[in-house]
Amino acid sequence: MVRQNNRKPDEMRPVILQRRFQMYPHGSAYIEVGNTKVICAATVEDKVPLFLKGTGTGWITAEYSMLPSAPILRAPREVKRASGRTAEIQRLIGRSLRAVTDLTAIGERTITIDCDVIQADGGTRTAAITGAFVALVEACEKIYEVGNIFPVQDFVAAISAGISADGEKLLDLCYNEDSTALADCNVVMTGAGDFVEVQLAGEKKSFSRADLNEILDIAETGIKDLIDMQKDALGRDLVWRVGRVG
View 1 (cartoon, helix red, strand yellow):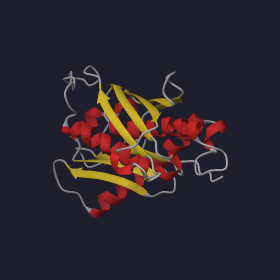
View 2: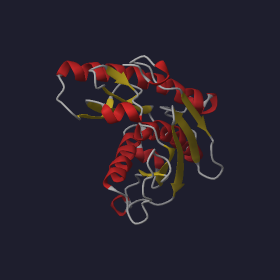
View 3: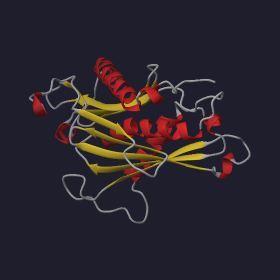
């Protein structure tokens, strides 16, 4: 099939990843993946959920939202409570970031990650995770004390992959590709190469174990590239903090 911008099957859309995007949060980042654009912010508060009080352990939680005008067709504003899809994405972002964070190193603090989609063209949740990681590292720098464990112990990024209508394995699906895909997958991986989450569903037909392996292989390649971009965005002053002890 011919892809947007004549991309190869295993080629990502152009990515822009920038930190210090906002003035007031403890950490912030802007990520653009093709036509998908997300603002990520991390705020540190000196409080924890009730179940963590007195444990010395912190928490990371996430809130995700999409501007009504972000997708092709206007989405109603969620004014009362998050929809099921939004709640699922919020939990995914939180799980992904907690997977690479030493929560005891945060102390009894909560880091809230806000991910706001200002334009959507597929892959909003994976872009949010990738950008939120940069915001998290920047926020943790504000509470880190030399000699202690830096809270973020590894990188984490996410990308989509799938099987096109004509059976081709594709990396980083835009909306048009996602909406017609035979199978759609979101993959979250750490810098060490471990999986945090694999969300794969056959949308219109089943898929084989060989299909799964091929999808995971191209996703892993894309995530490695995204982690390199995270490192570039963090720069020399922050990239060396990740995984530091002491």
